[in-house]
Image (cartoon, rainbow, N blue to C red; front, side):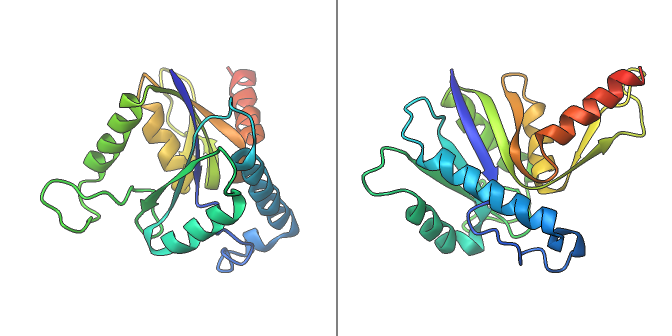
Length: 196
């Protein structure tokens, strides 16, 4: 059994990345972005042999910048390794060729995820700690078995929803996520219990 740390769009994220969305320019989001980047750097550069492998999803178009950012974090003498999985632009969909594709296309969404998940399973991954950007959560309007449930949205939310469908995986949200994180999830779960 193996733990895995997964982060979305974290290596080259900057406070100006969200310039189209005024909310992300607020000082609390800028602080959260800087804090998230610091935390991820600490995880990647940790000398602990107990640290789970790190997988980072980054847009394929920014792959070289992502690699450069990763290399600047990890000293050549460090025993740590982090892996980058390229994604399509503005999507967490893995940039994986499927079937006869010579160049990955945005088609076969489910199949591309199935390929990646099967690789995780072959590696013996059981627990996935996930963070990064972007995540918004809320309570579902519909009830599942008479209860409201947490609904995950945006890029990070999509990945959480997909991975949670796999019974073999225990998916745990990190505090290193923006704009919402583990503490927000705990508050939503508390709200559900209070209203049962």
